Image (tube, rainbow, N blue to C red; front, side, top):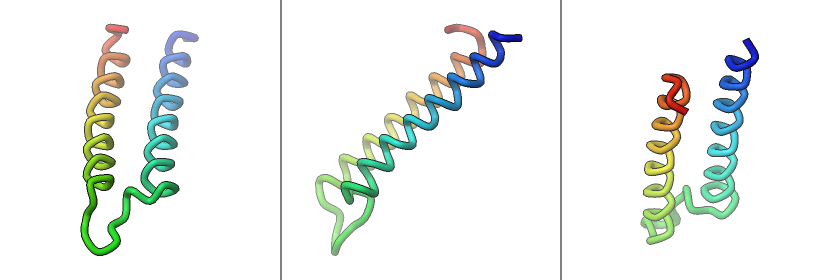
Amino acid sequence: MSEFLIRIVHTISMGLVWMLVNMTIGIYLGFAFFETKPSLGNYLFYAFFLISLGFLIRYFIKKWKGKM
C-alpha cells in the first residue's frame, strides 16, 4: 500500500516540477510568447518543452510499469 502511495507522490511531484520549470522559463522569462515573429529563444524553449515532455512521459511509463 505505501509503495503505491509513494508512486503517486513521485508522479505528482515530478509533474509539478516539470510544469514549474516550463512556466518559469516560458511565461516569466517571456519565451512562450512571440513579439512580431519567433526568435531563437522561442524555438529553443519549445524544443526544450517538447523534449522534456517526452522524457517526463517516458519516466511515468517506466514508473508505473514497475521498472524503476
